[in-house]
Image (cartoon, one colour):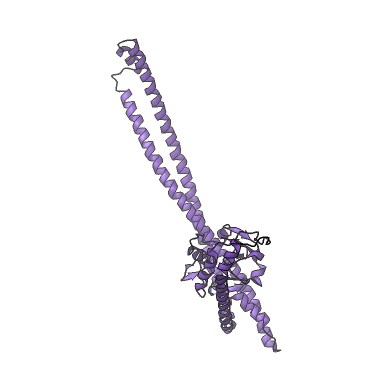
Length: 356
């Protein structure tokens, strides 16, 4: 994790050797640049995810519009066929007009009145058929306009996605070049980070086990409260029962490599990890940190509970809170799913939290 590497450099003791101090300052400067690139890359990846969500919505609209267009065309054909049949009937009546045919064919006055009423009804039916024809023609044209507009919008989203991909690839290339200049320091500190992650995993496992032990007692005390006891209900919504499962499930994927656009145990990006974990408990979330921030209800930082989503860096990054001021997330390319604390850079870029 880049932040931990920078913090370790800052916290390491000075040995009085100017070359060592100079190297530490140089490494810190490079790490700051890499961290800025990571931030930009994270936002670009999530912008790509958001554009993909929008593109899928447009494609669904295109499919629906196409189906509606086919229905309108079929209705138009039926209306035109009905009108054509009626016109053929009117103009093949031995050359007589409707009124003349009614007058000459009547046997008495009642018959004459009935024939005129029938002719009027047929005329009204002709008008309705003609109105339907005009309506369906208008509907077909309107559908065609909407379809062209949706096609243009989809094409624009495809171009946007291609542009985002090119930008991300360029930033990845720059970032890898920067990382190569400090590869020695990263290799040296990997063992320290692995030990730290092992300790955090152990602490998390203990915390989850303790929560599971306390859950039955907490449920019992909440159902049978002592008479006259003070109301300690939180002002925010209580975490759903699935929250404890979410943390346990997320813990399974610690160590899975970060993968741009990934949403499976073979590789995750930040919102892909959140989406995959919540899907295991039957909750469907979009593959976009921006979209995920619109789900659930807001939670203040002092009311965070394990299973809440925490957002950073202008919504460009998201993780799952696990308690103790820590969260599980997929940080960036070259890293793995890990536990980090909401401190340092994460504290300074903290946006908010949502309870799903």
